Length: 77
Image (cartoon, rainbow, N blue to C red):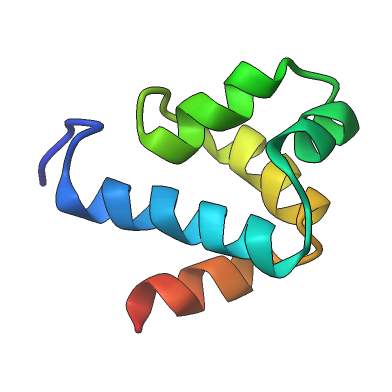
């Protein structure tokens, strides 16, 4: 198991979170406002510069209007 934030698998998660945000019709600024974090927080996790823990991931996906199960299912595709 590779633990680097630069692993291909983690990069897939980052790309999926960006895609889900775009599907939700939200900007990084809008997501950040809901999460009460700076826009750079969103930018950094989407680019893979910042790793999300499971609690943060749960807040992000709820903000995007999907469930953790949707994220897991789409990662498996």
